[in-house]
Image (cartoon, rainbow, N blue to C red):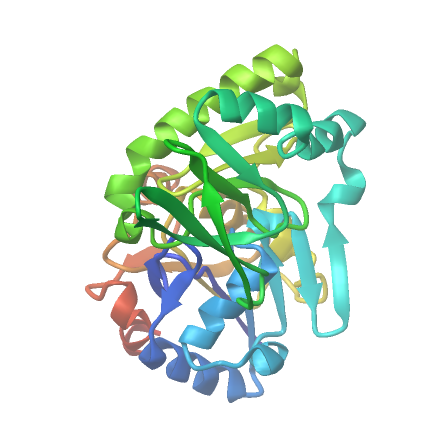
Length: 317
């Protein structure tokens, strides 16, 4: 048995504002890898399920066949886990009452009033796309999480809309798709402001919130992670553990990843299995590169970036 574990964003495709854009070449080679009986292939992503399905679809793998290609999947950085048999773990069931109250409080009436006073309009349960200016007015398109259009609605002057990502465990603030042409560089300073507003809101309404969760800022989102283990909030390693319970420590493991939220997965697999090697694309983050070097973990940094990752991996294993 040989175990392959794949991150998506930055590993099999460049990060987008809604999902990782897995290339068709990577998707095709991934499918061929999974066809071999001696291979078990799983994925571990920070994305929720709907966005993950868009990622694999972009690589030419239909949502209906995701668990034909993969033995199982880790979503939301380890907070939700599925296998071919169905749900294995949903961290929401293990979170504190305080976390669940704050999670609900990010899009309730009090939150909407607070954020509106700061220039933002919160919309729950809908995905937003493209703010358009017409006749001096701003309009935004709302759709459900399957992409079906629900119609346009007008925004008050000067108000920026934020929508609720469809997570099982986390809670997330996102700008409409297409904002700033989906440039992560241009979106990042906007989310610096949203992060600070969220901090102010939490401090005012939920004193002591830091005991229950971590507030994380990305280039294209602000979101919360519950405290479960007490050590860190990225728990991909714990998620992967739930999919490999039957494997012995001598199993050959090929872990493919690129970022700081993959470190718990690197630590778990490199300690659990004696024959584990980490493979990273050339665009690997500084944080992960440093961790691999500092901890003396066996790894290869490929010449290929995430667009050509599978080609480089197959040449190297």
